[in-house]
Length: 236
Image (tube, rainbow, N blue to C red; front, side, top):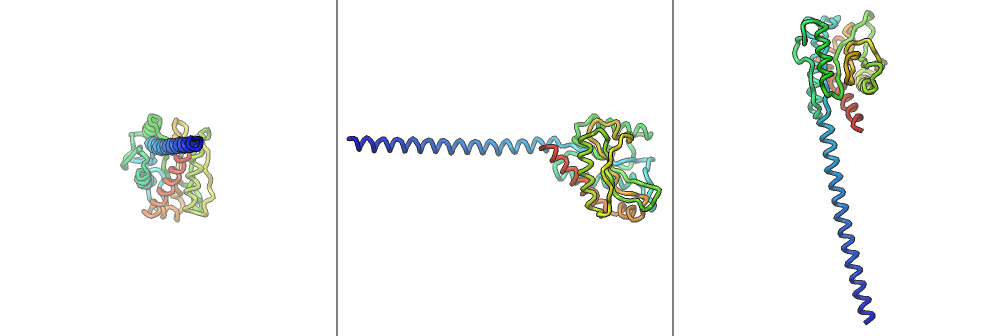
């Protein structure tokens, strides 16, 4: 009888252990599934919140810089901005443009600048990127450079990332991201803003490159890469 009882007890203990194991496996599966669903939600929500404003500088009667090859800054700004918009949208980033045609936003220069700033301030943008071209009295000066407001931590981080991305296009470019508190766009905006000077129209070689579709695409790709890197870091 004792042997029979021991045998039944062993069978009972084995059944209980088996039931516990089954329950544990089911619980673990449930936890894994919950984590996967939660992870997907985080990714989708973060992607949905990524808004970037692209500001093609100048427009209309305000041509901006005039290149040594007579190319107008306003035209190059717009083409690069449009290509950048396409690239960002392919990465599921919502893009808002301050202008989408060759015209300016307002009649006067001051009204135009105020309208751009107002659009940025009323938005929920993670970042605003103003596209420009540079110029200098010495023709030898060249290289893309990114500016940010002196007191903007987010602007500085974005500028440093974009500067490194742009340097990949020109190993000879020794320029660094630079803080500034005088630019109206940087002073008056409440969102993180950077100004990307894509190159010098006063330099023959750079002006010629900036006029080509191939180089405009490369600039847009570099800026896009930098923006995506910045947005991903903000999500961490």
